[in-house]
Structure formats: C-alpha cells, structure tokens
Image (cartoon, rainbow over all chains, first blue to last red):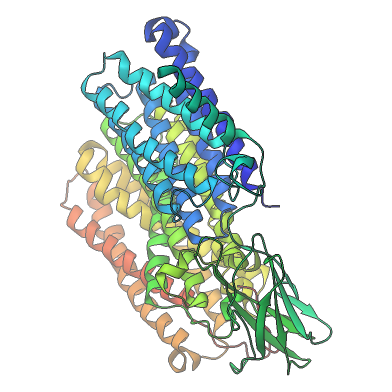
Amino acid sequence: MVPRAETAHWLAAAVVLLVGLILLSEAIVGTEVFRRRRWRAYLFPSLALGSAVFLWVITIFSTFSTMHLLAHAVWAEAAMVAGAVQLAVVRGKLRSPSWSLVTAGAILASGVAFLVHESNPWLYSRAAFLHHVIGWLLVAAALFPAAQALRPRRQVWQAGFALTWVVLAILLFADRDAAPIFGRFGGSG
Amino acid sequence: MRRTFALAVVGAAAALLLPAAALPHAGLLATSPETQSSIASAPRILVLRFNEPVLVAPDAVKVLAEDGTVLSRDARASADGKVVIARVAGLRKGAAYTVRWRVTGQDGHSPTGLYTFGVGVPAPPPTEAVGAQGTTWRDDVARWLLFASLALVIGPLALRVLVLRGPLPARLERRFHLLTTVAAFAFLNLGILAFVLRASNALQVPVADLLYGDLQPFAEKTRFGVAFLVLTLGLGTVATLLLFAWVLDQLVLRVPALVLSLLLASGFSLSGHQATEPNASAAAQLADWLHLVAAAVWIGGLVTLAFVVWPVAPTLRARAFLGFARLSVGLVGVMVLAGVYLALVRLPTVTDLWETDYGRVLIVKLAIVTVALSWGAVHHFVVRPRLEAGEQPRVRPSLVGETAVALAVLLAAAVLTNATPPPPEDGPAAAPTVR
C-alpha cells in the first residue's frame, strides 16, 4: 500500500507548481490587482496548509528509513507553520512584515532537511543530484521572504519567491530516485 | 553565448524529465519466510528481496535461535544483486527465529533491519526479537513528555470548552491558542522520538546506522507502531484544526479538536498492557482510556490555571478555579475508580505490589497520587470556599506546586506503562504478543 516514491514526488510537484503559478501571477499583476478578489489572497496559504496534511500522510509511509521519516516530518511541520502564519497575515491577524521571517525559517528548515536526508554525493544518482539542487535552492530561496521582511515593497523578492516554486516543481517532476542523472543519456536505466 | 547557455539549461531540464527506471531508496521489499509469519516446516534457505542491487558480506543475514545461536551462513546475492539468499540449518519446529540483516546499497550506505518468523508457533513481535533490549529510561522520559504534551492539548481545550465558555479577553485567548498548538506540535515530534527510540532498542545499532534502519516491521507489525501512525495523522489533524480555529477565529473548531484528541488518547490504551497482556479485555482498555483522559484533563487543566489564566486574566481567576474544581471532582472519581480496577487486573495478588518491579512502581505512583489528591483536597475544601466568598487568596504558588506533583504522577505513569506487569494468576500461558 506504500505509494511509489515517484507518485508522491509528482503529486507534490503538481501542488508546488500550482503555488508557483499563483505567486507568479501575483508578482506579475501586482498584489493590489491580484487581491481585488479576496479569495485569491487565500490561495497560497491554503495550499501550503493543505500540502502539510498531504505531507503528514506521506510521513507515515516513510518508515522505510529513520532519515526519511524525520525529513518528511520536518517538511510537514514547516508547511503547516508557514501556511498558518501566511493565512493569519492575509486575515489581518498578524500585521508586521517580519512575519515573513517565519516563511523564511520554514523554507530554510526544509532545505536543510533535503540536504541532510540526502547522504549521497551530488553525482551519485539523479535523485541525489536533485536533492542537493533542491536543498541548496531552498536554502538560498529563504533569502526572498527574509528580504521581504526587511523591504516589503520591493517586487524582486516577491518575483524571486514565486520563481523558486516553479523551479522546485520542475525539479520534483524530474525526480526518479535511483535513475541515472540525465535520463537515458547517463547509462542504463 | 547567451543563446548557448539558454539551450544548455533547456537541454538539461529536458534530459532530467526523460523517463528512466524508477526505484525507491535501498530497502527490503519482501522476505521468505514472510516477516512475522508462522510457517509449517523449517526452511533451508532464507530469501530477502531488495529494491536495488546490494552488496553482502557472508554474515549479512543472521538467523538467530532463541538462545542466540546463529543458524545461517554463506549469504550471497543473486546475479542482479537484488535478491539475497542465506542457507540455514538446524531450525526446528516449535521455535521462533529472528533474522537480522545488513546490506550495503549502491550508494555505500548500509541499511539494516530485523524481522521474526515462527516454525509451527506464532512469531514474536520485532520488539521481542533475539538481541532486542527492553525499554530504558530514555523511553520512560519520551513517554512522559508524550503524555505531558497530550495533557497540554486536552486540558486547555477542555477548560476552554467546558469551563470558560463564551468570549474571553484577546490576550487570554491567544495564550490558549499558543499553548494548545505548541503542545500538539510537541506531541507530533515526541511521538516520532518515542517510536524511533523503541525501534532502536530492538535494532541495537549505532546512531549512524539507525538513520538507515528499516522501521517498517515496527510500524506495521506492532500495536505501538500502528498507534504511532494513527496518532501522528490524528494529531496532525488536531494541529490543523487548532491553527484554523486561531486564524479564522472559528473557536467552534476547538470542539472537534477536543473530541478527536480524546478519541486519539485511546491509541495508548489499545497498544499498552490492557491490549497486549494475556488477560487483556475491552473493559480494561476502556478503563485505561478513561483513566488517561481524566488525568490529561486534570493535569492539563492545572497547568492552564497556573500558567495561563492566573497571570493573564485576574478577573477570571475565581470563575476558572471554581469551574475547574467542580470538573475535578468527577475527574478524580474516574481516575481513582479506573485506577483501582486496572491495578486489580494487572496485579493478581497483593504481594505483587512489593515483589515485582511493576508493583513497586505502582506503589511510588500511588504515593505521589496521594500527595496530589491531598493537595487538590486543600484547594477544594480551603481555597474554593474563600474564592466563593469573594476573597482573593494567593493561590498561584500552590497551583504551581500541585502541577509539579501532577507531572510527577505522569512520570510514574510513563514508567509503569513501560514496565512489565506480572503474569495473570489463572490466565492462559503467556504467548508472544504484538505490542
């Protein structure tokens, strides 16, 4: 009954891509225009919270190794906390731009979890390569919400944050666990 | 130059998306005999099928008899490296065996694990495999913190839903939200810690190897493993409800959060002594659940009174204290009745109280409970009338003291849960149980 690793990765990628497109739309048209319809503001935090529930389900299927159990739990909690705080910001319960630091912390923790749970070197397999890329991407991307806390009006942080999710989705769609790094170019597979 | 770079990026992205073999990380897929199965006749070979080629040493698979004798030799991998076969000799009918395996994956890491099977007898759970260690003080501490975090989810919710109904000052409301949500997250993490600790007692491998330890037999073939999975999903849901209650100001969501938490507490009763000992019964499990739930509401409520209501909302102190005092009468009644019943079930003779470890821990617990109840009685019979009369006695230090004693009760309960009770006097012969 354990879902194939790819299935879980691709489901996650689909959600991440949706989040990325939503954030990118907001970055392109501007927050004011994007949020003329109130419900649009809720899309990102709701998806983050929803994905946290999905990640908890994946967590309990990850008992094939302690490392994976711990990593998935970190991702689930990070998504849950970041989603709830963003939802509270949208609702007006939290007003300070500094709350973006929670999102930054969640993304940083997720990136570190990716790097720690991938114990193989970069070029060992495609999954290893992607996990390293994703880990460092998330660690670096934590700078966007952190910068948003300091300079909330700069659009570049918002756009960078949105693009991070799109790139992350592509990387997750590419995840094939033990496959060679570059598909059939890399050898048998 | 820019165009070449763009083409390279697009090419690399396209290559990454090309289909290729899809395998999960190195791990055990299937075994013969099957994990925790009971087979009719002794096998001559053991087969372990992995999801990717593995390297094996001759002693990569060890089949251990109950006395620790190694009955296997010459483990070797198949041509494709995905199947490991070990020859076994000397297995007999009417005995259970433990298989400990350790292979090296393509990545150079060494996943490790264990499973059991029986020949003509039921297989013991993995926690009772040969070489497995019983619970240690680490398990006791983890269990204690787990109980405490559950109490800090249930207690404040019960106090808010049953005693302090209606609108509250914003600051107090925020404290309630913060306490219950942090406790729910603490429970999730402590649950994972307790589960991994329990598995590590059986695996008996260094921490570095534990990170690659196969926990599936523990998650799927033991009661505590199944309880861990259900509680993790359930408390994840509770945490979500609590976050929504805060963010959306939908305080009514606390009711399902409370109900779900109370129901989830049964996970401990359905995976503990009352479910695994030879004289396990539905009545004992129900009593255990009531005992745990009443204790959680009582202890969590005390913490909330001492650390949330008292410092934050002076005007609500009397209302909260008096309401909680009324609730506590029922809680103490349930705790005592259920506790006495469970003691009678678990201790067949009075001498078991001082002749067994379980009994001695129970004596310690009873002593601490007596202190806690006496403290509560002082609150009930001395402080309560003064508050009802409109006085404002200095109660907080006393509440903090009672809370500390109550948490000590919880520690004793955690030790008791991990201790082995004496066998029932006229029960069936002790059989391997799936804990």
